[in-house]
Image 1 (cartoon, rainbow, N blue to C red):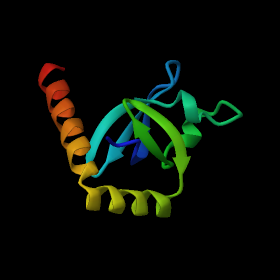
Image 2 (cartoon, helix red, strand yellow):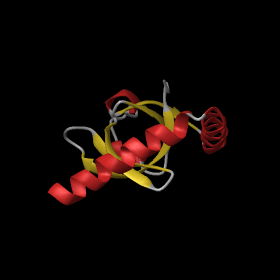
Image 3 (cartoon, rainbow, N blue to C red):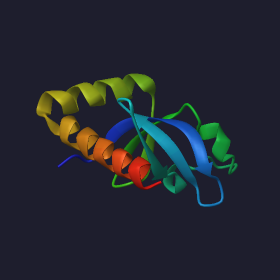
Length: 98
């Protein structure tokens, strides 16, 4: 079971609800950003940042180097593929229904 998979925040989808789009290895998914909000409340400052994501929540911010190292380890352990595929299926279902 994966504790968190690294992804890059690419946009804010709903600032009021603290939701943003995150890209994990080319798969995009909406996640809750409440746990990593900047102290000043400027959610737009998160665009371009990297975060560890678990069950739809960005749990902590990390730098790009740490994101790459984490993804490498997860891929070696076989943890990342399953999570990325689940995200891909979810993205396709949302596109089909939306």
